[in-house]
Image 1 (cartoon, rainbow, N blue to C red):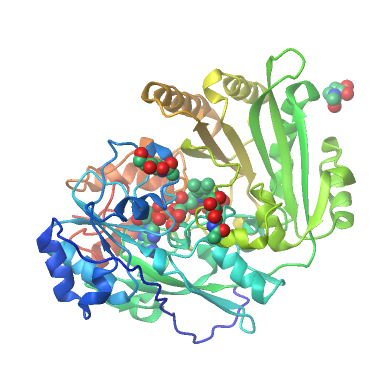
Image 2: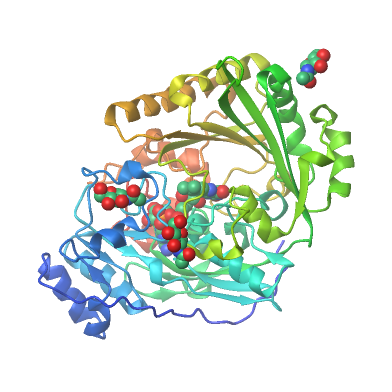
Length: 532
Ligand SMILES: Cc1cc2nc3c(=O)[nH]c(=O)nc-3n(C[C@H](O)[C@H](O)[C@H](O)COP(=O)(O)OP(=O)(O)OC[C@H]3O[C@@H](n4cnc5c(N)ncnc54)[C@H](O)[C@@H]3O)c2cc1C
Ligand SMILES: *[C@@H]1O[C@H](CO)[C@@H](O)[C@H](O)[C@H]1NC(C)=O
Ligand SMILES: *[C@@H]1O[C@H](CO)[C@@H](O)[C@H](O)[C@H]1NC(C)=O
Ligand SMILES: *[C@@H]1O[C@H](CO)[C@@H](O)[C@H](O)[C@H]1NC(C)=O
């Protein structure tokens, strides 16, 4: 599977200093410890923010995407550290341990439950925004990328050097490389090349003792665990070494929309047994949401069938006519583009210059301000009656800003063993369901309506989806499926959600955790517990 050659680049450290100073601050013990531990006091003082610092709010807000976690009663960190040097990371871990503060690591801040920047105990954020160098080696088809880089920066830097290479990660350009790859990471190329984590060949990692480890010095167990076992459990990943993959010069994107009146139910029903067997170089998905009829204002559901294809329109059309004639795909539904253009296209920002990929604060038009995410895996086609029940829920008022997307599995996902990485959702899955329950207004009562809708719909889906365990994707973090009591850790409690995310890989993750972080310093509501 690995087509790239390994080279011996060293990770680089980016120095982009904020120029603020150390004022009179609370939590003096922790802060004094930081200055003592740091090899160079003046450098660390510039990257430490407490609530009295005028920049504290903007540094905190910069990576809060889901405004559910931007309310006045959301717990705030005592201190934010935005390291520019590895020694700053080491000092923060050391001093947090010493003074009983929890550390949360933030790369892109997209955690769906806000776990990278919200905790119910006194805590410190290590925000890796300044660790975002990307070094691309076209000849050897590898790249080193620091965790605080966003996917857009990674894709842009690859495209800058080669339009024939890509990395198989997620789509939204503001997702952080650190959290994304820690949880697996799937995107446009996953049926051809696997998850993002499947394409990691080395890492730079800091453990609870502050040791700087690479693949060789951490050993294969820990290297296995950090590639999909979820962020925030084992230590802090500073950088990943990635294998780059080939893409053709011309790709095709198609979109076909059908409402219920245009036989959407029958087509979605058919899609379930067809999409899984489409070529590896496709990303078949169908997005479902409600729309109002322009004539009488009544609600219906639209099913938007789309895919990227690694090839031209002329190559795609015969495949679709042969395998999915009912969709009646025509040339007018298709457009050709380059790989890097497809990244913009998929998030509705195709009219922007490529440089938009470097903009960490740009929200795409597809982002809801408030959202709750859930996931499911489907192993057998859902009956038409079952689909109708889901569609009728989508036409309820509470689902007005909600979409549900089915992402076809198959391709190489069927051929990678379940225990190759902690990400276990491989063969046997027809598709994954992504429940993107969104809303627009910040009103407590209203938000409960949307959360209730999400939970009721999830309950409704029980008979149609994977069972024992009901599988879920760790990067679509969902605390409804269980969480640790943060004061202590119970293996029994964690094994419920742990098996949903990791199936039988969970026990190996617990074993690695117990070895690398026996006192459970790196923890959050869904971190891997120790055995004891
Ligand atoms: C709009 C949107 C679109 C998305 N699209 C996709 C998609 O196409 N495919 C997909 O697979 N996922 C997708 N996701 C989910 C996304 O992959 C996860 O939310 C991912 O964990 C985000 O990574 P982050 O660095 O931005 O998040 P963060 O919130 O910074 O981190 C997530 C978790 O990882 C931990 N962590 C962060 N950095 C590190 C580090 N350096 N070392 C150790 N632990 C760390 C955090 O503490 C937290 O527990 C999407 C999310 C959003 C909001
Ligand atoms: C978060 O809340 C703060 C304080 O109310 C506000 O200033 C900020 O604009 C909000 N962030 C976003 C992204 O809306
Ligand atoms: C829906 O399906 C019926 C029966 O299969 C067919 O006659 C009709 O033309 C279809 N409608 C559309 C809009 O495709
Ligand atoms: C990034 O996007 C934001 C939000 O649209 C915009 O205000 C800002 O000017 C952009 N930054 C750059 C450097 O283009």
